[in-house]
Image (cartoon, rainbow, N blue to C red; front, side):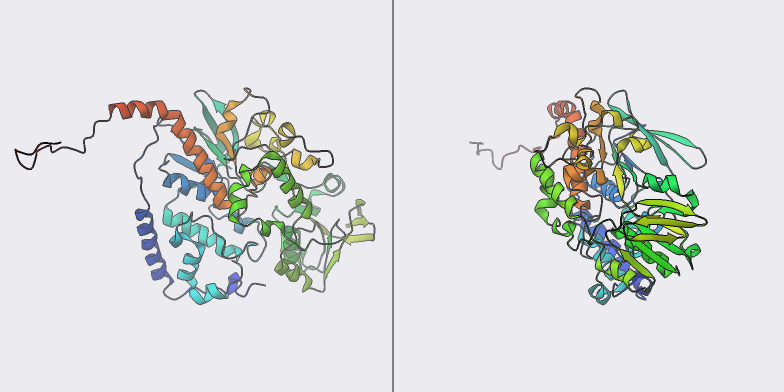
Length: 487
């Protein structure tokens, strides 16, 4: 477990003053890097945004910041949730899974880094003692980042559709819980909607067919863990989220927790840690398709273990039981109990938590309903060698290097080039998992793609402006003496 869990972090007595000084430093650093500061994007009308970002989490905030630094300021960030971020809504780990020195949302500005904020609030010794950042602390950092940069996020709007409009525009339809609806027109739209932003978290059919809805939940859904005290809980899956939820049940007093994994052994090596070097993160998207496919086949085949601290969090409880090589054969209700049959026998439970990952399928997302029939998948663009076929990889959208969707049939939906996704759907095309470690290169590429397209759209108008440009720098042609000649 982390040396300084979030509930043990005590802000310094002068944290407020230190954070004020840090904010001043942020303003100074941004002012020194403000060149060129001139607004340059030609407006398309009062009601047209240059970019609408769907999702106000870490990627949405960082992208809003990146566009602002590029002087693309007519933007909108819409978020479905309340102002409290996703890290407080359903993430259940104690700490982030990435190392504490991870960077990304600060976009290379030292005073905006999580370390600068953490040390201002808790002190340098606390940072030195930290191994991984507590998730609630990370959310507090993101909240500070949004505040100090004055990044506007409009909460409470769930986007229900993105569709093409006339004049190369996109319409973004959204509604609130009270039924209020609104529409935004945009030149570009980015779906920064989290890991499941081009699909959904998967609950196997055997679960939904066999159990009442109130007897199971996915790890991404709300779970009343207090109600599991004294109960028997089964968990399907062996990833980090499955272990996180098992730990939550144990810590809330579950009488017994059985975690069932299909694999005969848990993976011990994490390929996502290997990926964390500049060349791979920033330039994987530049590889030819054959090499991308080989890398992804290897990474997906290696799978990802739970972090050691997450495993140990479960193993510390005598009520925790790990079952390897235990796929579910049958699942049924026996009286008031859940009966889970595996090759090693039958396990009885009162509640089932499903941690079996997600499925990438754009048609499952309402905001992608209009786009889904036209989106190219990897299976449409690349035929792997015999023996290297992979239906799961083939289902991923085939994205450009700046995360834009592409057409399955050329000419049918050219508007897809203005629709981008930073979700896990981008993994095969760009190596971006939607997580923190891939945040900076993802945001850089998306922002660069948007600014490129905006400039190309107005290049002819800019050339006309250049021809008409007559702001003189040389205004005094007097010579030093009348006898001097300019040769």
